[in-house]
Each structure stands twice: as structure tokens, then as C-alpha cells.
Amino acid sequence: MRAKAHPVLAPVRALWRFGRWRSYFLYLTIVFALAGAGWESLRVAVVIAWITLIVLPSWFAPRIIRWRQKRRYGGF
Image 1: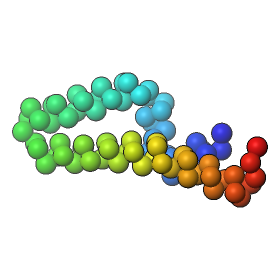
Image 2: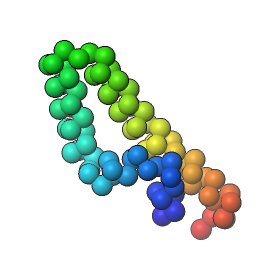
Image 3: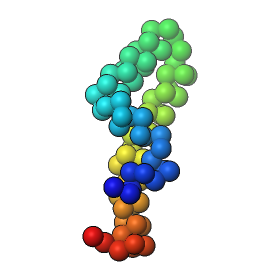
């Protein structure tokens, strides 16, 4: 699929390759380790980055990219 090869989705490709559940458990491990170490500001930054990484490129961007490509190249 041409939409998954779009440069906007480059940050999400590592998550797709690593796997959804492995990525989620790695995220939880990092967040709990940062909370245990007392680095609240870094933990908040990781949470915001994770939410941005999940919501924008993996939920909204593929739909928008597919829509634009269908308009440009025609639907199949």
C-alpha cells in the first residue's frame, strides 16, 4: 500500500515493525521507570510524545493520506 510508505508515517514504522503490544509494554516500562526515578517532567514528556505518536500518525494520517492519494491517482 502506497499510504504506508508516505514520509509522514516514518516515525510509526518502527512501532509497526516492533509490534503493537511490545511497543505498549516498552512504553509502560519506561514510564514506570521514570516515575520510580522521580523524573516527573521527563515522564510527562514521554507520555505526550507517545500520545502524539499514536494518535496523529497512526489514526489520522493514514486516512488523510489515502484520501489525498485517491483524489490524485484515482480510486481502485
